[in-house]
Length: 325
Image (tube, rainbow, N blue to C red):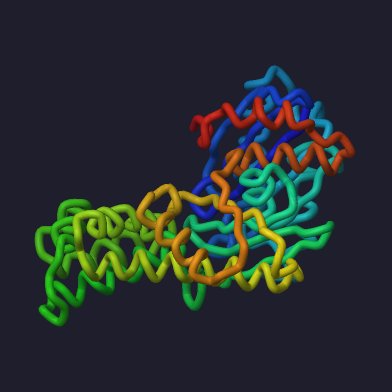
């Protein structure tokens, strides 16, 4: 029984699978993105969540043969790594586990843990790829001065566009009515109250505004179409930099897949695909095989020395991309 944990910026997904590719249980829990609240959050979320997903499978945490914990922010504050590495021991009651950034779960899920690059566009953005046992990460610098092409970045650009349209500094478009309706604004300046005063700049809530921005682009908003197009270009650039860092041969097609909620939008996926093609490198863009939590469980099995065979991966791929709450 292998436990996979994918800790995203807005939620944590957990699953238990066996070596044949059968999903024994899946759950979601609050995010373990701890930078704003402190390291204690990791244990506070994982202890009940892991116990619950194990109970769903008629088991206990000690029954888990091996676990992989993909954690948001892992490795981005080197002083925190020892505490993050130690946290699952309390959760599981044993040391049969490995921790790393949640980007690894996204890669393992989207590509079935084979050589290639996965681009994440969720609350944040980054890429992770592997070739011949070597891994490389690009991006993931955070929403203040990075995360280009992410849901948060798209939302932030959309909020800036709304302010310019409301002021008359930019030609108004469908974005105005999309955000007014979505947020229930009585007056346009109420946007400041909602985002700053009520939400206190909450990362996840702001990122969720990606949807009305993309909806405005779908409705023909020229500014929002430009935002989505630029997001696709930024994500393609992450892939190109990762290819270079992996030393991928110029004449060898590189598998590329994706994870994260923002790329569920067909408009963004199309822009990303087009910008990838514009770079000129041979690419095989693949639809993701597995959700990141299932990828984390697949990776746990590999780390335990029991890699899941292709038939088992195929069985895992029949499961939905999200777990139950």
